[in-house]
Image (cartoon, rainbow, N blue to C red; front, top):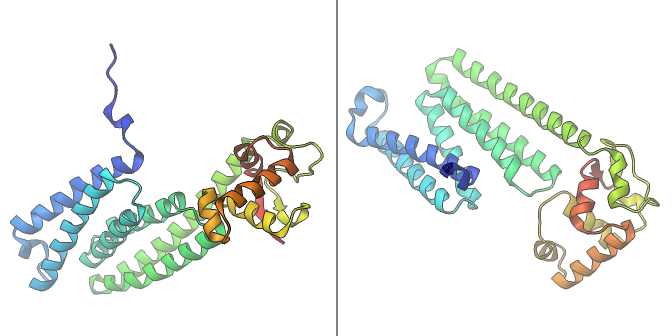
Length: 264
């Protein structure tokens, strides 16, 4: 009889939380029991206490995230706080890595529109560039190296995202639209822009269609955003499905995932 791998029962975020717990707990124990004057010889007693508090705080956050993996905001807080303190302490490589991990998870886990995500990520990169000024006491060369590393990470991130989108779109041949959508509906080639305004829908239907195709929001969440009742949102979505001749919203999303959804 084969044994079941216990890790398979855990969510990806829970596995990450285990690693974060072990690392932050180890750092906390060193802060409490080790001779910190050897580890942080140039820092004041107050700052050393702050470091200990931050590590303990991250340990608790990791524990909470393990039991409540959907509390993504705690994950972001833990990664950003540790990233900043690692840079301040001179652990630049680890700090930049934690920031990179934050960017990736933020992009994957948030349900914002693509435009909102781009704005947020741009602001994060700019803000973190100012954090790097803490590196200057360790040498101006290390500051410029870290700054250029952040720029490289930004370009690498854009590269990976675009490659992933291209691969995803290529996995869904355009011929599949006939399996899900009415043949009377004209769609562009895979990978091209799909303008919501090109369809004969009401303004409210276009707005709802754009939002649900660019986020993972539920009908209830859409109702709050558009100041509508949930039943009315469901009714409008039913009209949209009838218009496209689609069986359900999941089928429509499969087809629309081939395109860059815009409103022009």
